[in-house]
Length: 392
Image 1 (spheres, rainbow, N blue to C red):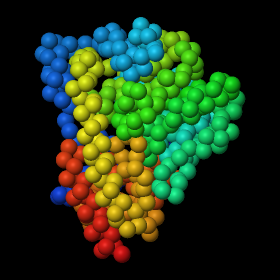
Image 2 (image 1 turned 90 degrees about the vertical axis):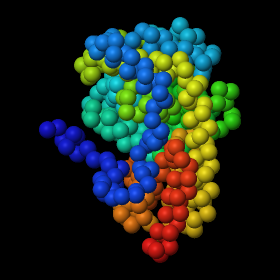
Image 3 (image 1 turned 30 degrees about the vertical axis):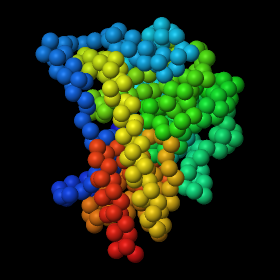
Image 4 (image 1 turned 180 degrees about the horizontal axis):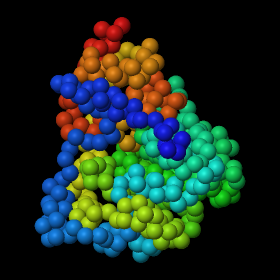
């Protein structure tokens, strides 16, 4: 076995979830998904596809109908980009995680230097390591109000001509941190000078609560990029369309990379299932029936949970501007993995330990507030408050 594979850490979120297996009444906020099922019309489209016998292979890069739908969706969010410009730059992948792995497989060789902004979903660090890269991290810093912020000068200083790839996730899982358009422009301009590729994980682009963009979505590298920039943007149907279990995503690529990525898809998964692609196509075509209402509900969830957490003595946190997570620290509870396990056993409250997202997040906890019933969030906050009184 390759040593890098043997040394991969198991998910600390799963470790906490396993501690709660078999316990009744646990409020589960540990995984990054809503507890709402995929809308009926999306599921019915998949069923109709299966009933029609669409159980065969598809094009490596995805069904043309889906790729055209993604191109139109991209144009809607970024109208300065022509719809027809995007079809030949789209690769449909078997989930956002598969897309991110394909990007590393395409760009990264053993010994390459890769820089990742952290805290981050652990796959973003592990995937280039699996390819044999030397990964360096640039941590966000914590302001006095508990907000995580980027030291842009430190990031730019860390990216040199020796840096093959820079990976960023914004809006960020777990912190809710979001890049500004000016920061994106500065990062892209610097990476043009150094010849560094940028991999932007923008799967939370639509889950944005700011009012500073015309389209209501988070700032995107696509809005400041040139057609042939060394930029790959990863997206997923999981979050914005309530399709986590469907395992479908896409990459937006420079045109020269599309065919090579198609070859890699052949060697990884061959293609995404046709019935899933049919469902995704209608999800995009009728997305206004899903995403705007979802974002509005998530904002209600955030605005329900965050004030309740802030009222608890010893909680440090800032209001997240994007994503679906409240990220907070509990005074005197520095071992967040142990704290998360105790909360499951003793309070029936399932949260993710911050250390799952990097050492700089040790001592923090992530709460996914994507709850169909906001009262579950209030109930969870009360359980946390009562547990802290007992623990003290």
